[in-house]
Length: 90
Image (cartoon, rainbow, N blue to C red):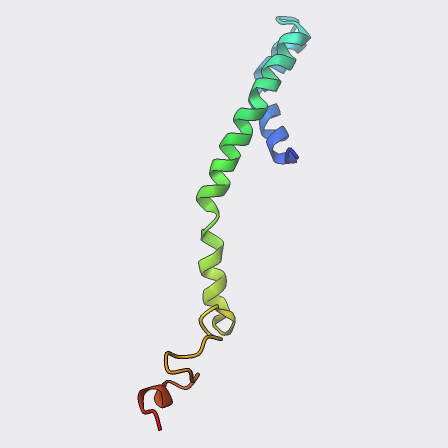
C-alpha cells in the first residue's frame, strides 16, 4: 500500500507541472504522467530516509528504560543471575 506521505511528496514534486497546467501551458495528460513518474521516485526517496533514520529512536529508547533491555533478563554464564555466585560456584 502506498503511504500518504509518498503521495503528498509526489504531488509536491509535480507541483510545477500543476502550476503550468493552471496557466494553460501543458495538457492534463502531461501533468498526470509527471505525477505517475514522481510516485515511485518519492517512494524510493522516503524509503531511503526511513532506512537511514530507523536506528535513531531505538538507542534513546533503550537508554531511557534500562530494566527492559534484552540482556537484563538473561542469566550469567554460570546459569545464575547473580554475578558473584557465577564467579564462586559452590
